[in-house]
Image (tube, rainbow, N blue to C red):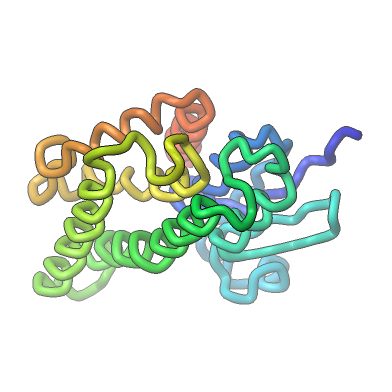
Length: 218
């Protein structure tokens, strides 16, 4: 039975929505991007879909389920569409729980800190150097955790690329904003090697290219 395309509410640059797109591509699940400008996220009709007024959100006509919050969406997509465990693991296995561990670390540790670094560097009306320093230091701390874990493995869990890896990739697109403070290649070489491996996957490369084109078309 052919699947009906899912709707993915997204933004031209927002990393959280693009990481969901990576999962959809990896699972070969058809979907349609519905781009939203920032002001439109905070009003109807989108607020009825996501009362938090952020992207992503996903509507799945195959199941009748609509979800927001990227971590919840990723878990849903894996449980619904990765029955062969191509980018996930057998339920109940050690790797199954380790992958969840890394996903939760990404949504609670990487995304918020990286996002605040961008906000206070570019958009906050008052310049607060100590706050910027705090969040740049958090980028370094999170990157150090990943670098340490990846020093003797190619991927985070189970010796293969999984949704746990995909979840971290898009937020590293902000690093050029802090090129004078962070050099991933020299400061975190194992993390850098993992990023290059991940970005070389055709599905991941496609999404990164799609994002770049969406940002140019803005």
